[in-house]
Length: 520
Image 1 (cartoon, one colour):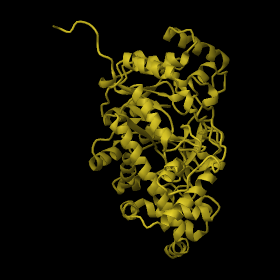
Image 2: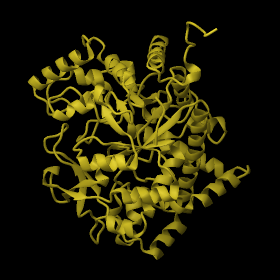
Image 3: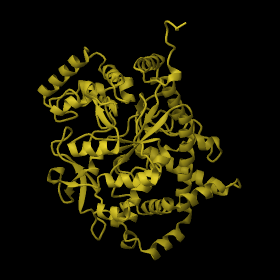
Image 4: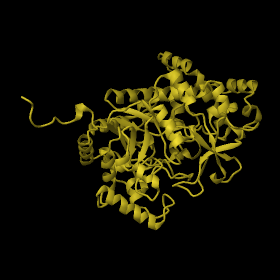
């Protein structure tokens, strides 16, 4: 798929401002769309939006099909009188600069439960809800059951439940459903509200020329409804425990590699079913997003298989993946796929060949352009192909200022000498003094030939390492950053708008008229 020359911002929904402790689908999301429109941006990229599990990571979601309840705007529910008004006296004083996940999750869950109870007693037309439950039953029934089972078992992983539930004994599950109908119904109600609010925001953005880019992790979390319901499609033993797990070998971020812990697929069984599980997954993602960025695309060509008993990723090996067959099956069912391939890391000619065969644009990250690795040259703008997406950094990188100012070993395996050379190389290549390295990298991405250029909002705001979203290989302290409403100043808005227009990335209607001879 070919994209127009354009630009956008990477910002997860949870990072939006607001008084409810976490960014959500309420007024701040609409104001951010307005900011994108005013500055000439055409893309809002975000992280996976499913309900999170271990470590609050969007990449370890409890479901590939459901939405994260934390993103539901309680303010909008109150406006619709599904929830009591959220006045200043009833809302706790949450931090403004980060998400306190335990407190926010507890408060959010109690309010959604109250909204569900009020909804169940209303005499209003319930047909939209009933239609939602019927049309989405193919994933909703299992998800609501799974979520209720987790809550009843203290949020423990499904492999720790009683054997009858682990093995999905029909009689035991039916008895549980009968005994917990209200709780199961509440989970369905929450997903109904999420879907309504998401569609409203997506329509608002699309009508104003902004398209949503979503992230789809290649692997499913072990503690997820999809693995629990289709255990045969994953490399698990008879008790449901992984026999091999996913990760990556030693790289820029870690000398021992990364052991993600996700169970690996049994690709032979997926192929035998015509990749129907993946087709359902992609179809659902395209209901939420206009374009999908597939995380760790290289795993479809070959993936790093780590024995489950291994302590880190060094014991792994490369195993051939499904290749183009999966995507050809998906295209036959869904039509042309609007996909960005995350082709970072250990990339081989075979991975590049698969990406190009499928016609997917890859990624170029400017923070990788100035190191000693010979591959760094591929990330310099003069070597970009048009058919790619240029980034100053991603959610796994430090912010640009954090990267430029960081000491050796802080966010990678760089030595002090490498850090000094990298800084000098960046200044020389960009003809910059380092005073505004974040704007220097944004301009380099915006001025490049790449069809699409995207930067994290942290770089637009000029924030340092304190605003980093994720440090790969660490289990705590990630995904928490939020920005304040007053951060999007008039000066910053004007600067980004001007740069976007000068680099010919703004929509035609938002560009200033060209002065000069009119041909008369």
